[in-house]
Amino acid sequence: MERFQDENKFLGSFANEILVKCPKCDSKSMVKKEPVSECKCGHCHTKVFECKHCFYKLKKPIYQYVGYGKVYCNNCFEKYEFESQSLKEKPEKYKAKCPHCNFQEEWKPKIEEFLQNSKVVDGLAKEKYYNLPLWFQKEVNGDIFWAYNEEHINYLERYIKADLRERNNNGGYHMTMVSRLPKFVKEAKSREKLLKILEKWKK
Image (cartoon, rainbow, N blue to C red):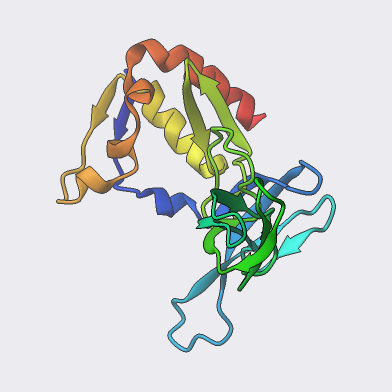
């Protein structure tokens, strides 16, 4: 009988190195924690993205902006909406054209801020700092099954294989990674399919 005892690991326990898809070349790349050089306490970290295939590297997220609004034209007094394209800098003013009379004027827009790599809402599981798709992910009956890295894969495999799954009651069980797994991962009927996926990821 396979046995698993929760080691009270949190999802963050596996987040020192997260394998993702490079936004430039689609190769397997990595977001990893690095200490902040200016930090005196020794506990501050930042996250760096690096692709060893195309050598693309990021040391901080890149944001883009969209300016938008609902206004009344000062020429024909009709109401209309405007929205800019994705911009690299926050627009203080945006020149919009009235769709009713073609009159152009500048407005102070409302601003929507988003990460550069979040242009498409595609349902993929993503690393949160740079918003890059995780390398290890697979759709399973409408749900997304995913892992950060090989250590995470091995831990999931041990859990899914187990016939007996034991809690480690230290007061924080309901916050551990295992306790927060979605229902489909915990169900016995998913076991064979998920183990095949994990085995493929390990190769």
